[in-house]
Length: 262
Image 1: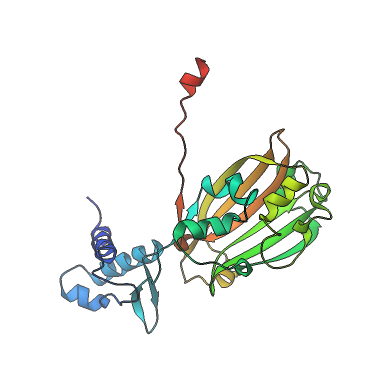
Image 2: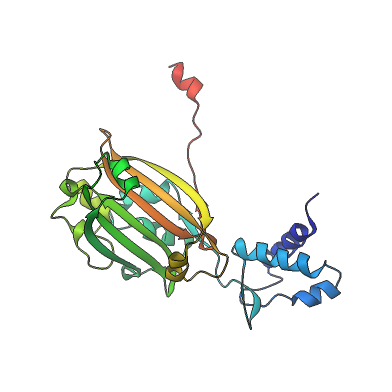
């Protein structure tokens, strides 16, 4: 059996999703639910914390526990990198997420800083570079309106991007089609990617930068981008506010046994 706090959290979550509690509406005070027989103060508090961690509510002093105004952004998996979006159009990855979520966007909602830095150990290892080698770091902060959603820092070998729009610190994507289009025009057409995700507690500077509530977690993304010949042209590290995204993947289910029999 699920613990009492989980049962209560699931009950409240269903009431939120059904519209019984509307966006911006305050949930009952903890003492009111205790008096209604929903559980002890500890049980109700744990249920509310679960709802907060799942992105359904926010809690703050003086305002209580309130249903979030907006559903999490749909963070596309494979579809956000469709070549037709950035090679033939101007729908860079973060914009593809907004379009899929039915949300408005402005190109200027992505800010960035670009500089040549000594490659951190994880970056040097990914690129196969020796200790002390330099790379270009393109750090972006993406917002939805006034609310930050995530950061993403891409690391490139200088010989791949020197003199291109990728090293231009102008806010917004790196021109029409963004960074992937720049690489494509430079002769480095992306062919495959590997993404790794890690859920963890936010560091203090991340909580401040992303305007996270106390106790909110982040999802750290490591993205490796390769050309058809196996050249790594980008290694990126992203930090996403966990409650502000819903991750979606749609792909063909593989059948390795059938492939081996061909």
